[in-house]
Amino acid sequence: MHKMKFIRNSFGMKISIRKKIILSFAALILISSAIWTIGYYQYYVLNHKIRILDRKVQIFNAVLEARRYEKNYFITSDSAHLQATLSYVQTAQDELLSIVEGHSRYVLAKNLESMIQALNRYTGAVSALFTLHQRWRSSDIDEDFLNRFTSYQEQVTTLGREVTGKMESMIDKERRYVERLIEKSKSYIFASAIAIFIISFLTGLFLVFNVNRPLKAIEKAIHGIAVGDYQNIPKISSGDEFESLVTSLNHMIRKLNRRHEQLIQREKMASLGTLTSGVAHELNNPLNNIYTSVQIVIEELADQDIEYKRNLLLDVQRQVERATDIVKALLEFSRERTFTAKPVNFNQLVQDAIKLIKGELPANVHLQVDITDQITESMDPRRIQQVLINLILNGVQAMEDGGILRIRAFRNETEGGFTFEVEDSGKGIAKEDQVRIFDPFFTTKDVGQGAGLGLSICLGIVEQHKGRIEVRSEPGSGTVFSVFLPAN
Image (cartoon, rainbow, N blue to C red; front, side):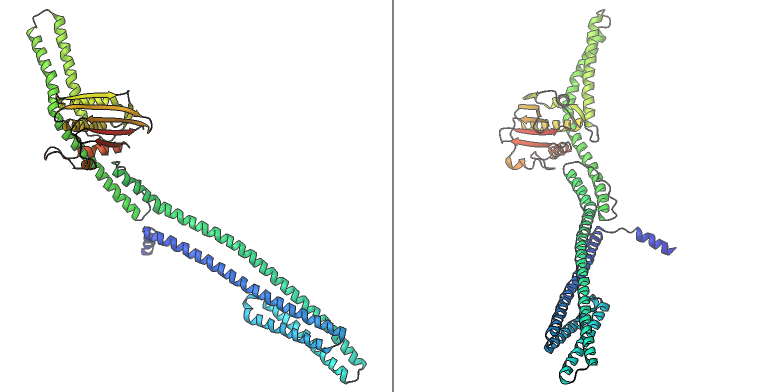
């Protein structure tokens, strides 16, 4: 039971990415080393076989020389030729013995022994013929001597042909074996190249799927966080540090997403506080009209002029609708929502934003709206409305002595989308501050006048839409905030 539990734990064990990489490269090195070792062994054997073949060719040449002197003897009957024959045969024997001693592992020993025995028999026959030749000069020649002499001549010729044939056969076998080794080496080199390619390819795939792909997913998620897109990283079931890292990052992303939403809502509430006085003023006018109209109706109840009373009540109805629209817009603006993109008529969105900030526009600030056409694009209306309100209020606050505030929108056919701009004729922004105005908590206002989050949140909202926000400003010449939103 304990043994089975240990086995399950062993197979269920998580392997770290470092160990995976070490194991993969260790396997690559081990298999490559095995291939290299086998290849080197093949080369080593082939080298020995070529050297053996070369020495066998030398032996064969020595045998041929011996046969040449043997034939010269039969032509000239000069015993010196027999001595030369014996010398060359002895050289062949010594070479054969040397091959057996030095390369016995790489040759067919049985064939060499057979060749040595044949050479010994040939040497014996040549030696016997040489002895008889010497006796021929010193003794009488009888019939028995001639028969023996003729018999040894025939033996020398027969054994010489046997030795030559064996040597030719042995060299031919050795050459064919070397050729097979060369072909085998070619096939092995080709197979080794394919095997190394496959191993390298599999190692590359392992690194792509177990290292590169998780890193890309994490890199993409971090880039998304940088631009305000708090999407979870897809779960990775790799059983290593990447899985733990992705789990931790997703936990962090969820917290960042929640805090980002809270930050947006907090800034929205701050903007709402700024708008309260203006909204109260906007609501006060229709309420005054409603009150006045109701008072007149009460006073004129006895009057028979029904049409006059109808007009008063219709006016009350219009004022109620106006107040309802203001309150509805205010509630919509303040409501916390998740990011939701949908087709929105931008002109209508601008008009709704203006309703909310109308009470905040001083009498000395003239608002100009220039929207070239009815632009309808996919966006989150509440968030883009918050961007509009923040930029408009910033522009109003920059024009302490009044001026012109322009809102314009136009198609951007080159990049595919549209651009809207909010321009004020205020005091402008200093060059050194322009690079920092989108930083969180950076503000040029007096203490208590703002937290410095408005433009930072605008940047985050625009980047959530895959767009961009830019500023152009010259001190004393006003400021233009330009927002590009791509078509989705």
